Length: 153
Image 1 (cartoon, rainbow, N blue to C red):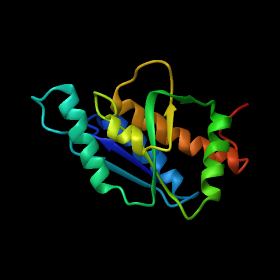
Image 2 (tube, rainbow, N blue to C red; image 1 turned 30 degrees about the horizontal axis):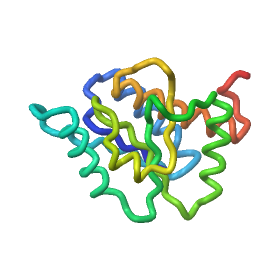
Image 3 (spheres, rainbow, N blue to C red; image 1 turned 135 degrees about the vertical axis):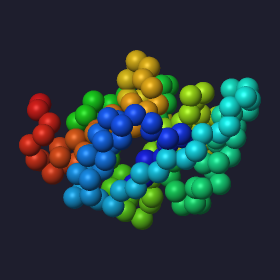
Image 4 (cartoon, helix red, strand yellow; image 1 turned 60 degrees about the vertical axis):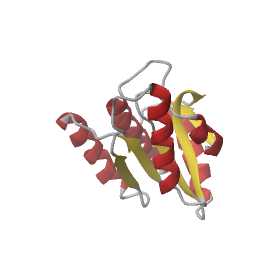
């Protein structure tokens, strides 16, 4: 499984949190996290999101399964998200890429390629914060799957 993001995480406290949970995730599965450079500003939102989409599509392999983090996606509580991830891990031959897009959201090219859309909240968060929230939810999900102490129900 992988998390891909558009743009770098510039806040030190967010990088520290992301690193903390990425290190914890190593105990559960092979997991990759990659940040891609922002597309240069000065373009329209549509042009920017299309260039971001083209960048991501150029990096995806044919067999990669793309899942978008999107405000219009399906919402899960932590327990149901763990069930969703457990179902994905049963299909071990597939590689799942969770994508956090740029400031203008996901272009239609990515929406057409995606197999699923997930929303972390109805609220709007910065793209940098979403990275930390998603990595933590991955860790939480695997502690739920393994019935380990972390998540209180």
